[in-house]
Image (cartoon, rainbow, N blue to C red; front, side):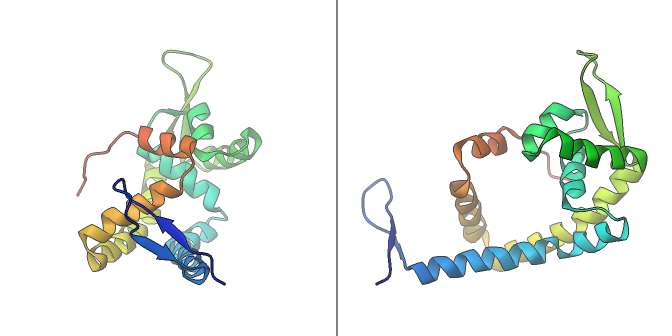
Length: 172
């Protein structure tokens, strides 16, 4: 017998019943969507002998220039040792610059160099194009629903981190 999941709104009436098979298809859709979403950046990263950890670091440093190493550790949820390996490579290759903190000289603030910003653009262009096309095809209600589903999947601390990210202005 299939287990059913019921999601009830504030009013108490049930809106959604999903079987285990339907949930499994959703999980599989996420696996395949993630594979497609990362495919183009993975090809670029492979040219440079980098991995997805490099991409995530570049993404968040680009998103918030001056981000501290401690804040990046918190956002990425990786070990200090793991992040240090990634940052060491990015700094040695001239993609990231580490500067002494303005308020606290013990802090290290991270910035992309021009070369790092160019790589970030290459990595994100394909992903933005894929997201833009998918959002257009699905429509505005689906976009809002997709974000709600993603946020509902996050644990409380992860959701807090996500919501704490400053809103960025739309750029051309």
